[in-house]
Length: 330
Image (cartoon, rainbow, N blue to C red; front, side, top):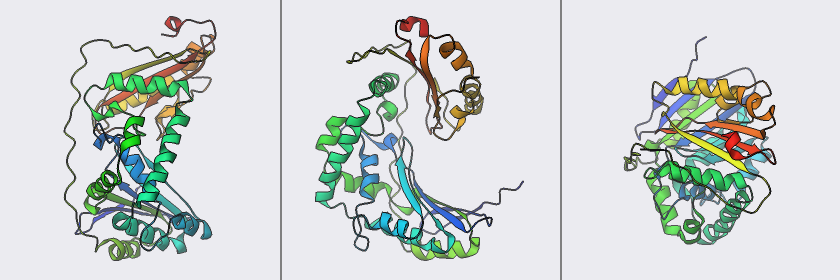
């Protein structure tokens, strides 16, 4: 079956992918930016995620909170997320209201305010988000394993960033990051749903075509050196349970070995590990579940393997059954 996706590029470098689907009066509009924690350095870890938060805090024509209210009033949903290699924003609306999404995304691509009061307010929110994650012992363990696996590459740190950086980051740093990466030549629009492709392209040209092309963002050239031997880390936190985490260096998404490794993760973990998020709890018939949970060595087991621009990790984690030593899990 033909996919029938049309690809276009505006003069300012903005790439566009369109897929009409006329089965229901609904459309979805996405803007993807090539920026994530991979584009951060020590001192500003977590900045990409923080910028994502600030994109909902207003422009000269959209007050704080108005984006969500505008979408909700018109029967839609919206959200955003930041990961290692990208940041994405989307709105899904009745197809006759999809112009609202184009208005929002074209406006905040260039006009986000980054009001200092809102920046400081969001600092509290993001630090609280991190502290909430810290309540899970697995977060501490996974973060330490990640930092141990990557000594040089910025995959070293979690997307939310180190708390020490979040406490001192400035409005000027956030705004500079926004201006550097939120340019049309660093973005991809993806739209699918009940629309005519030519009409949608004209609307995108009208809303986004006048946004100036920016300087090409700096390329991330750091490569992780080969690991010369096994690395181990122990994390001690208050609690009654013991947790195991193992990570193996894995191929990037463009590597010919990526899909064989992806299938391997599926064999071990079930189709859940092959989802977009790359993480799941295995079904009862999977090899990991049978080997660890059915044998009562562990109360839970997980596998994680995601598509990344640079070589990443395939990770396995388990919660040991009380009284079972972690050596048995291993």
